[in-house]
Image 1 (spheres, rainbow, N blue to C red):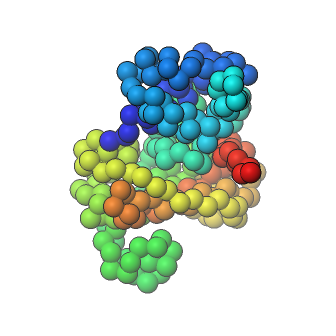
Image 2 (spheres, rainbow, N blue to C red):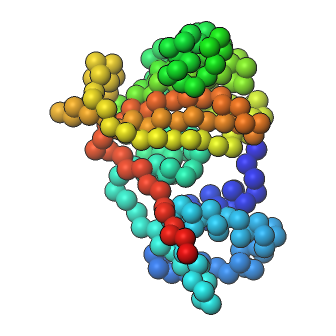
Image 3 (cartoon, one colour):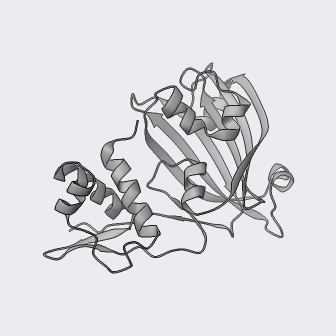
Amino acid sequence: MKSIYFDIYESLRDRIEAHEFAYQSFIPSEARLAEEYFCSHNTVRKALEVLKLHGYVQPIQGKGVRVIWQPDHHANFVLGDIESFKEAAERNGLTVSTKVRSFETIIADGRIAELTGFREGDLLYHVERIRYLDGKALIHDINFFLASVVRDLTPQIVESSIYDYLEGTLGVRITTSKRTIGMENVTPGDRDALDLLEYSMVAVVTNHTFNEEGVMFETTFSRHRPDYFTFHDTAVRGY
């Protein structure tokens, strides 16, 4: 289950992206937001801190909290969020679908253990998915899920939303995701799976995702057509 402050963050984020709070305007005061969301001031502060970390707002001493977010014409996946593909696509106003290319149960050997970070001998679900946005095949996902956490996974669940299943059905709290981004040459598998046009490189986002007990349950390699996506984070200079 998500925390209340994160629900408020998502609500405020969506309102900013819908231009309810315009660029350079000030959002309602902490007291007003606490009243509106029926929560404590501390909960609102936590939500505003997440908005700040993700580049949506900036607190201005003595004035309030100003909106600094502006829309991006690319589909926008936020590095600081643990967000499912479905959630990110809906937030970007895109029509989405997923095709399961392969689904199998495997025992991690030495090569898979080194590739994924799981232990040799772990029982894993190995999944390949093609992600479509507005009818275009743009993401080739190669997933490894720890079967002891992601229990009783099926191709039907994979095609819908694994994170919805984890949180809603299994009660797993997804807490941390470590990510790296790089560029790699297109593979024959990419060429066969994606609408790559003339591109010879793909952007690869590697995710290692952990539950609340610190157990890594997912390693995913998401291979993206490079022209369609931006991945953004917000850096804050410390003084």
